[in-house]
Length: 201
Length: 201
Image (cartoon, rainbow over all chains, first blue to last red; front, top):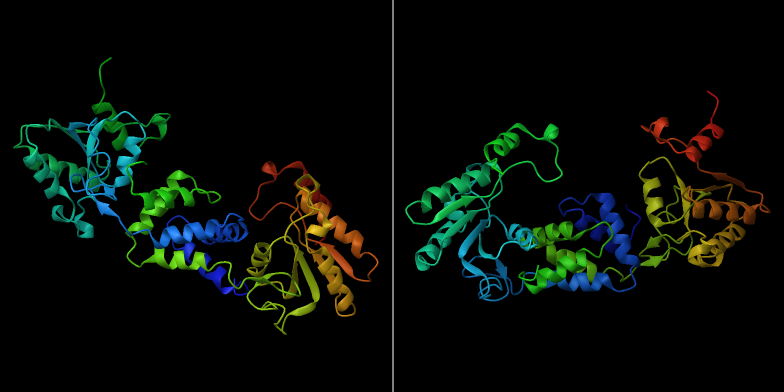
């Protein structure tokens, strides 16, 4: 790569530091930007430099926003009696895309993981409890939608135990075979969960 | 995606305009940059803004460079009697990685493709011929390493015909089954070429 211009080499190097982008993809992206007529490289460069300006966490649900309260929490048509607890803002984004959930969210910004030194105090669990205390009679259900991984399950369990004293319905999203999946290729835990979580027609 | 901060939405949108990057990957990249501690977004942003500064084409071989002559053409240890003709600078990069080729290159910056309105005058064929005239006695072999596609083959054929009058060896890279490939899955043209191009032990 030595013979390429310095600016191009830097770009390829920096692209390849991004997750899921190897050297070949980085090269392709860099050459694409070099050839692109619409000065996409300038738009992208400017956006990147301004990325962390004006990014706040919603004071209510801790989702990323550029105001004090996010658009979901300030939307009066949303059902404030249900809170869906997710690990990351991207998870809320995924749920929003189903167009099926009209409640609010609470973003933990991580999951409890002793092996990585992340305890309950490192994620926004205390903020969730404060929110409950503040709005106690309004909130009727907490849906625990952390990932069905070791860390996500531990986090769900922890929040479940913590919120038991409150008179609130606490639920956990279903774990099972994904749509279009094949039982033959499903792992034992998934299959076990799918059987246990079966529902009657 | 509406509830995300504006700067994050723009970044996701611009990433997803790059080839091979869909919305999900764009989201993952944007969130990764948002979280990264090492201000990678600033480095990447600055590099992108400076991308097209100081990018020239080598006056000899038309490869991308930041000087008048590229590091390959200015390297006296390279064998100037052989020119490897490639479509793009990335192809030269791929050949360099084999560490097996010590000659020089000529980058066409495209291939003849009447359907896209690209004729011989739109790529650097004239520059290649000028280079031959200038260095006639030195140059002994031209390796045509355009892609084995319709356009690449047409370009190789065109250059072959154009350079016939010169007393120079003209060769074409081999087309056949790639290493680790399977004859069962090879297409007919590749198999035909592999048979035709067989060599005796």
